[in-house]
Image 1 (cartoon, rainbow, N blue to C red):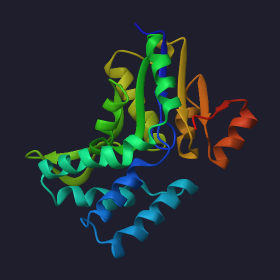
Image 2 (cartoon, helix red, strand yellow):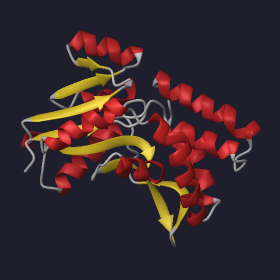
Image 3 (cartoon, one colour):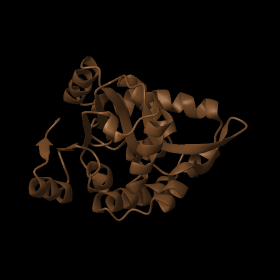
Image 4 (cartoon, rainbow, N blue to C red):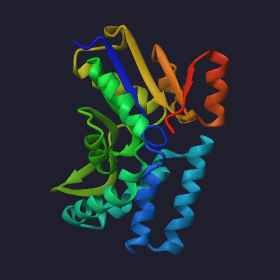
Length: 222
């Protein structure tokens, strides 16, 4: 069994950008979404996330609706282009190195992200992860309904999802000599406070101040 647990936020941590935001912008530029309607809303939700005031259910209603309007095959084709054009250029080389160091040590590694599993599944595989905890999507007859499924993997929901995942493998935080979580965002303070080794990665101002006050490690992957 792995002696250490290494958890990683995705957006603005392993990536030098936000995959949720980039996906919406990608669809706008393709003409799938109306720029006049969606661009301002996308920016508004992004700012709310940065400020720590995002209503996750309001955001998911906005972000998941387009998935229900298109066949899964078409969405998958778009995602391949999205990976090449938007995601691969913003994967941080230092992030790849960090993940590989944990993997080489035999640590149990997982991405824990609020971004939905359709967007993040291919990103997680590109980064070499076997485990992804993300906001899950409701599927009927092989197609997305535009609704989330289960607990969104956001703020306290990340703690819930990690506990459920560990329990499914007959594990707890106490099963590991060290549990690490790497994140850039104040939204991840609930999970950062649960692990034995919280690491602030190029943090926002709220997280930076919290990390300094509590003596948490602060690093840059830029």
